[in-house]
Amino acid sequence: MRRRAGALLAALAWLAAPPAQADDVDLIPQAVRQGAPAAPAATERAAKLNLENALSVWSLRDPVVSIPGGTSVDARNRTSVELRGRWRLGKSVELHLSDRASAIEQNDFSFPSSRTWRNDWREGYLTWEPAPREYLEAGRINLRNGVALGFNPTDFFKTRSLVDQSSQDPSALRENRLGTFMLRGQRIWDGGSASLAWAPKLYSPTPIETGLPAAGLRARLDRTNGASRLLASASFELGDLAPQLLVYHEGGVTRLGLNLSRTAGKSVVLYGEWAGGRYPNLITRALAYGRETGTLPAGVPGVLPAASGDEFQNDLALGFSWTGAAKLTLNAEYLYHQAGMTREDWRRWFATGSANAGSLAATGALWYIRAFAADQQEPATREQLFLRAAWSDAFVPHLELSGFALVNLYDRSRLVQLGARYDLSERWTLGAYLGANLGAAESERGSLPQANSAVLQALYYF
Image (cartoon, rainbow, N blue to C red):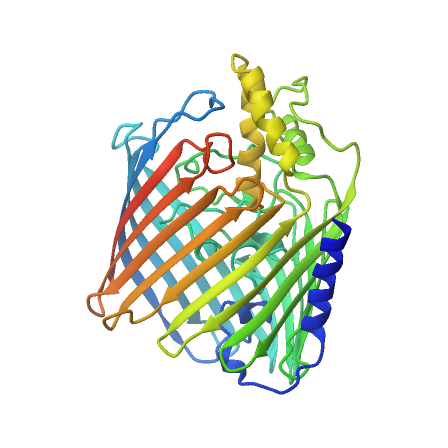
């Protein structure tokens, strides 16, 4: 492990080294450049309204560790109206809004019912520019950081923000999610920028939601503002290297972050992302949160060995992107989440589940650990590999093909998805996604009840 950590640090140091020559910064994919804040556009932009229908079906299997209550959802249809827009309210003030209202049909509840209607208020905030390239913002903001695609260690505001959507691609998950109510200030100058964001605690911690989020029109700020959080960041340019430094504080824990990217030739971008701080591992935090919110009984025994105190935890994503002349982009990333479950943790997870098959308390606590990781949008596994391919105008104009694989490096189980989107016209877009959890019965992905999935999507733009 020490040799591996040394190699990873050496790789980050190489990324930080001055480049031999400067290349065109426009070769860097947009997703890689999202770490550096950008100034809001000065021009007016009309609202965008679309109608979406997404039909999802799953093939189910019996997991080797039973889930209390079982899993019966194998079909869901979501019809949504989505609004995104920005309006000028004065010379230097803008209103930003992103909202999606949905009607849900699902095989395990009747339609219509109290669970049918759902609203996802993703963003709603004001931007004030008191001076050129200085901005103050207040409201619900989806604040994203990070240069990687499969896992973003510095994307600190991703926790508890998931909403239902068609694609499982991690890069899509971070674009379409609940924002956090916050105050944010930003200043941009030639060659750099700095920002400070504060999100107040508005609610006490609430239980995590399994399956679909609760129905209704509530804003669900209890998910995004259950703790007071502070984030300071600064970006600057060093040749074709664009580092971003971050300091994040939540609940008495301070974490540091760093994003780096640099071009290597005409088609390749190398990037790295790191975050570190002292806090408990995933198992310890999950069981503690379950007891705190009443989901797990206060006296439930520890189903897996948990660390007795805080440890310095490192998160790391190292990867590269290659873009070809045919609009094909390939990404490969090594993902390391030190707080995640090790090979031995997974062995104990399955052994404990088998030994306590008749205990709902034990198996419920085991599955709660994984549900907590998904709710926090952090990997359940310590080491993974992420591979992604995207091809625009594939074979014919307006056809985009994509696919990704997220591989557990301990048991080789995989989450894979293939996707296709075709713009029929300026108004209509059709999409399809095929996904699978592959692996042995006693593996991370092979133990999930959802074996395969298919999604058909139709979008109409007004």
